[in-house]
Amino acid sequence: MLSTSGYAILALLARESLSGYDIAQWMKNAIDFFWKTQHSRIYPELAHLEELGYVTHRLIEQKQRPAKKLYTITEAGREALKAWLVMPPMPAAERNELLLKTYSIWLTEPQQALAFYRRQLRWHSERLAIFAGIQQRIEEKGIPKPSDPRFGDYATVRVGVAYEREYVTWCRWMIEQFEQELQQQEK
Image 1 (cartoon, rainbow, N blue to C red):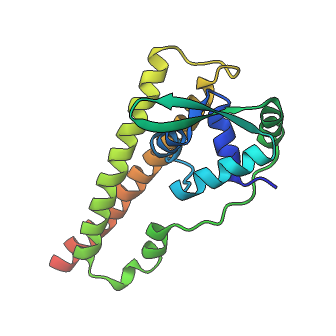
Image 2: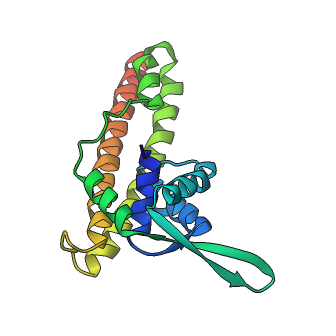
């Protein structure tokens, strides 16, 4: 049985051969927006993938550093990834601390809640700007076709933009609600 993190690694290796360090960087800088994998899980996953025959590695000699392993997906790994891609995803356990706090926000002072949602608005606005920038850079090169490896980048960033845009709208609505509450209290 392969973990979802194992499939995430195969997805990266399907694009190009990478070292464990390179995989960690990709996980941190590209996939982390929608799939979190602990750095400590990468090397055990690579070892497991190699045991299954889904990846191989070759040693690359480096000057004044230990040799590094460069991992490549095998045909068996590519086939396992292809089969997994069309399987229904497991239902995700929703754990949204912001919504949990919102559920009981009525217990706090409106001024504190207002400050809280303003911080959330800033955070989601910053993420929206990041995602929108990535989307724009991809679109400037031309919208990729579904058979292009960049299509997955484009599809995931589009949903990221939509997600963050909705959170920005919702945070603004929450701010309006608490501003109105404060105005009514002042009267």
